[in-house]
Amino acid sequence: MREAGRITGEALALAGEAVKPGITTKMLDDLIRHHIERSGAKPSFLGYGGFPASACISVNEQVIHGIPSRKVILQEGDIVKIDVGAFYKGYHGDSARTFAVGNISEEAARLIDITEQCFWAGFREVRPDARVGDIGHAVETLAKSAGYGVVRKYVGHGVGQNLHESPDVPNYGTQGRGVRLCQGMTIAIEPMICVGSGEVNELSDGWTVVTADKTLSAHYEHTVALTENGVEALTKID
Ligand code: MG
Ligand code: MG
Image (cartoon, rainbow, N blue to C red; front, side, top):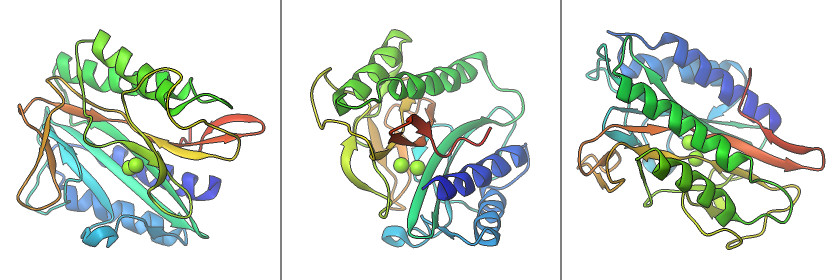
């Protein structure tokens, strides 16, 4: 899991460094696929449920599951969410971040920052005997205090030999409720936070999820392991 996580984190960082006005989301996807394959791994998302690319790349009001395309050219001021998975020696890593394309608005920068903070608020709740609801409660509390909406229709998840395993890890919840965490668990914590309500729709391509009110959305995800030595973000490489 640690090795799969490192490859995932490297691929995501590589794509993040390449983000600039004028690049297509297909070019970012190619960078990700090449890094994963030359590392001896496979892109987890390619062919998953029929998904046609190695990464999900979603721009502005697109929340998740955007399909990389030669026709999508990033513009100055956009924010782009890149979600990557790598499958290595039988295990998956899963990680996402939101990147600025050139100079972005103050509001967009704040949204990205708060979304990352929401992840770490959830991460800090991970310990033996904590509950999944503790994570969601921490994420939701911070997002709401910043005036933002939380996407409820899509959630974090267990991750390991399968990309998506139990338990669900929602970005909302009640303290002390839900599945009990224990040593050996590996979960993807992935806040999806919006300037607006958090209500979402799926586009007619059958994949891309957008905010119903067309407001900006940000996403931040790591694969997190609860080990006997503490809690680790396996896809964090710096
Ligand atoms: Mg992901
Ligand atoms: Mg995930």
